[in-house]
Image 1 (tube, helix red, strand yellow):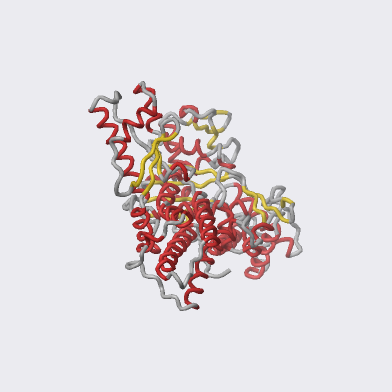
Image 2 (cartoon, rainbow, N blue to C red):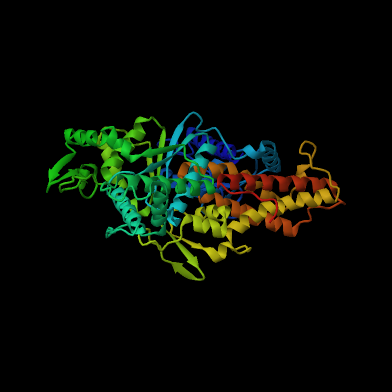
Length: 557
């Protein structure tokens, strides 16, 4: 409803400007784009535009005079109840009671589909996230990326995209060799045989667990095996099984698992190097092969094949090949969710794909900051190799799936996240997880109370929604009406944290309404019916928002 109204108001202001230009009251080189926004303060109406201020310089007029010229050409009516000019020349609009009633009926009629749209129907999107190397259990950082990626995928689906969730796993290269060597060393140790553990090996207890399982299956048959391949394969298989299980716990199932090894098997790594050379974008220096990143405006060239006898590719090379394959698959939108440790690498990868002649305009990289965990007021140190870290499974065991998902997404991905376990366990308004779910549970409790008191189920067709005119009521209706626009904005701007922020504002408004207004009043059945329908709209909006975040909407807490 708000999306359509916003567009109508923008068209009305633009039409008024055009008419003023035709009448000679405004002199402009061209008809400008008009933007309508929601004011931050209720005193400034339900919608506003600063168009007059932005036009003042070109028109060489006082912005308040421009605003007066525009406003006199817009007739209130329909959705608009009142128009005012404020401050230096802002044009403020107040929406009518008829608009609010229609908005409330839309929420109630669309139900579980409310907030969804078909704007991008027919378009496909690939969202790649997590993509953790199969060298150990998922950490808190992986958990944040998993939630961010899944919520972005859900948001894109909500606005019409056909979304593929993809996990790219590095099952080739040096890390895999070290994993195999670490597993072999633990295998030999458990057999009481001489073993040399690699200096930078993986020391977690999970490596010993893998070695124990290998002994249970193979006995000492692999004791003389020099090749690390069987140890690596066993470790990767078991670690990936655990990774899948962990992700499933928080409701994430990938459509595609893309193996880095397949890029080597298909000859795509060598193909990329040859094409980069042919394009003049790769050269030899100091025994290594370098990508000419500076040709694409980047600060320095990067090696893509290391010097030395093994001539191993750096991780940028297979990543370039992988991203070219993404584009070849024909998606309209390709989104990478990456940790902050990739902030210097992804521009080189994107430039490499561009150097291969691909249009990279469909590609978007989103960087999230790190996560620390706080317990009893102290930060817990984490390190994958040293194994002194809390795994995502540990966190799920302690606080639950909903808490992990909602807490991981409630802050902007560009900000560091301190996961405060003590706060998440509290039933308090300071806990963003509790606050959101409690609003839905509180709404559900009102319907249980209504049934217990024999109050009939409210019906929207004959309800008198014009009775909802108190400030707390109109505020709730408007906040519900803004939900589809919030979903669209979050999907288009890749700002998943804006949904829990919007839901928190809705929850705060609902708690205020609950505390100040008598909702179940036998003496006023018509008002009770209207208020219960308003509660239903809030409950629906909260449930749909929590669903987009991958969390439950509980009826009791």
